[in-house]
Length: 219
Image (cartoon, rainbow, N blue to C red; front, side, top):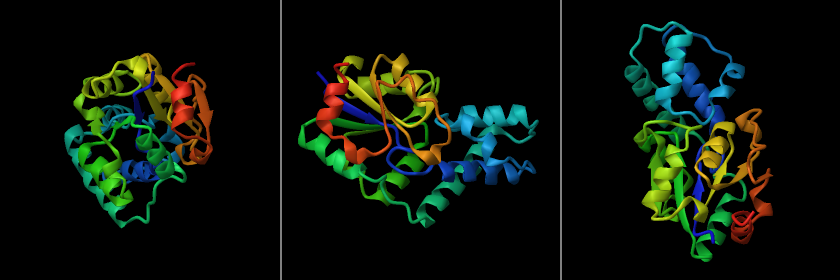
């Protein structure tokens, strides 16, 4: 029986992936590296730590990874606060359905806590979640299962009682490796993501409700 729904945030609750690409591009540009957005899509769903370690190696940067992450964090929070971002269409109604059915809810995101809270507060949906968890608190980021397994434990659930909603290939793989049912959400702003390992794939939250997610967990 499904007891909890775990949401990725970026690209699921908010169409923020283009903002993330811009944050990375602006941070790298400050270090004299110009990167087209097409080169960014493979990094969707990864933690800042992993991504900037890869950037440092790939672009032969002298800058410290921690310093670049701090620069990016300030950029991202500024971008989201200045944006006209709204919740992904249909996501609020889905959250209301989930809560009406008495299911637990969590956000498990590769983003940092300051950015997660900035986004959820901007969208006005923070109160819908029982737990907020950042992948920066685990050793291995997505596609490793750590973030979902830790979220599951904090919810006092087991993988079999949780459904994950993800929009990235890395996130879907993480959910599958965690032994959880997964709903893939095809968000065009997230780029070409392989969601084929998810139990089901949708492109519109208005087509589903809590009962759909409960049934998905039985597949």
